[in-house]
Length: 341
Image (tube, rainbow, N blue to C red; front, side):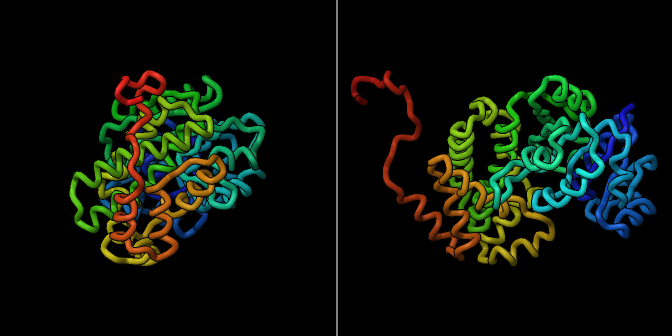
């Protein structure tokens, strides 16, 4: 049995905490709000997951020092806009060699850093990894089969997290490609906004399939240019997470996109969804990375214009459709058939 702290009491952190409790670990969840921690302690029900009773042995606290003291593993589960401020506070209590795994997906807009990079900035002596993949909290918390990836620079850390989380309903693979796993989990939220807009406009399955396919091409182009492995973006944390985020009504990004496609503003869509829409925060960061690494991301560019320049989604789609003609993929390279040279 491991002693584990989940930092963040949102739906994803709650789903993770229940899974770890069911795996036989001693788990405490931290909320920055004392009233929220007290309510969870009394009711053992999360307000956004009202049909699920949390294990009685699951504990709650609003004291960050208490949450981090003498823990075998810290699970970072705050929404990405709050990673930096939370990590800064955590640093006062982190011990050298402390294991931390982030389950948060997002790229910081101002610095273009991933979640692992932000944590490492404040806690450089800790061992930090990422856990990512197609994993909606609403399904994990009721025990539906889920597959996910544990990524770390060291095999020991990746396998440690794998062993902690693995269960008959939660299968964990390992990967050395931390950057690729994090980029896949972040960039797919931007593409899901576009897929949601297509749904909101009633454009059908052909359009969504095209957005998903060209979306994974955009994600891969940027990630590979940044040094990620191509296979990572073809796996669970890439195309797997992209598919579920573009297809499911559990996806906040897809729901926000639907509202945008129906004519709502970005502010109205976020307010109606009622939870952090990670893709909104990663959209500008994705463009920043694209310019830094000289990569063209047409879908991401149009999503940014809809979000921040009030561009009509219908016009954005038309502009994607009338772009210059090109070959789909760089098929064959130097070995193109004679008739294609």
